[in-house]
Image (cartoon, helix red, strand yellow):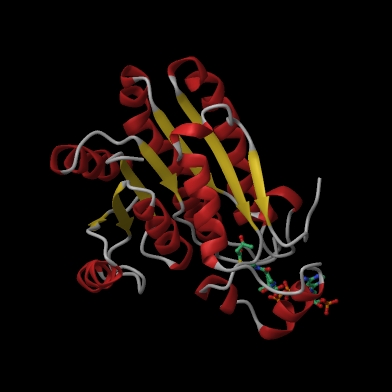
Length: 248
Ligand code: CAA
């Protein structure tokens, strides 16, 4: 990936950090984007930790639910670091509730953070990638976007929407060297999973043939594989990484 510029949204989270490290190890210049004011978004500490890992990575704060703000941050990244070659959309939130209780705010917050953000970031970089003849878009969806989940109508809708988006832009970018793929993690060890009440988590674990939750690095390596120069014939795919929880 010799110096390719990679932007990872949600890049300072559990899965995002592993994605950044795998792209960095493969030779990309990596930028992480996170939402200011959230527990995962502590730029100085995160940059220092990556330095201890042997990487120079910068963090930019941005509310990806806001298109204008996103466009301004991406313009700054291009100015500071260079044109974006690899975009990984890993930012995501949950606001779990059964539909009879789900408020319009819970619905809108999840669609804005998980799906509007993917439109906004990709819109910022896609034209440039096509003009330069190279690009890799990797969108992090979820097993629950593929199969649905009790209490996650908002989240599952956003994650299923991501793959429809991916397949469409895969067609638009195909002749111009720009691939777009979805990665659908299952339940991965992270604060998001730990926020699920223990009784529900135990039931979910029982549905996973491999018998454990996934590890963030197991997503990182798939993303780095898709981002590689040599992966140009993989586009419009949805790669499941879920321990066999959902097959098909
Ligand atoms: N399956 C079937 N029934 C369930 C159920 C389930 N998973 N969970 C709750 N119920 C039932 C209860 O037994 C109860 O039934 P009765 O009314 O007959 O007693 C009823 O539903 C309760 O309904 P409520 O609306 O009151 O539900 P609640 O408020 O107690 O809980 C919830 C709803 C918060 C969504 C809870 O079910 C939950 O946390 N579920 C887990 C959701 C989940 O898996 N989230 C994943 C987060 S991680 C992630 O998203 C990452 C990724 O990509 C994989």
